[in-house]
Length: 130
Image (cartoon, rainbow, N blue to C red; front, side):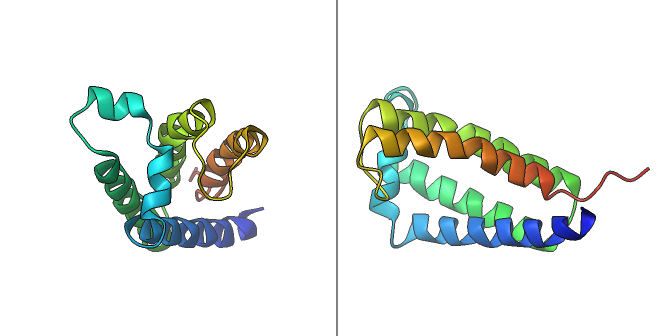
């Protein structure tokens, strides 16, 4: 099992860096569909600022997963995936299209994938030292 943790960690890191860079570039507009209106209504930030901040967070987490093989990094990645979950729910509730998620069935299916990301992040952590 431990032989799978390193490749899982590196692949997750690469996935996060790619997603983070796309937040800042090619998919910036599309990621705005995931920003809950309740957030921008209650906190003085724009959808674009949220997208940029989450992109930088993903790049940072992905880089840390590559460079710092510590349990806390995987834990923070799992917490990040939990933290962005309300955006995925908002995309479903508000019927906002993005990334080919143009039906509620597709958006709901995506919600079911979020726990897999949390599990992936937790699995990719190095084993606890005894």
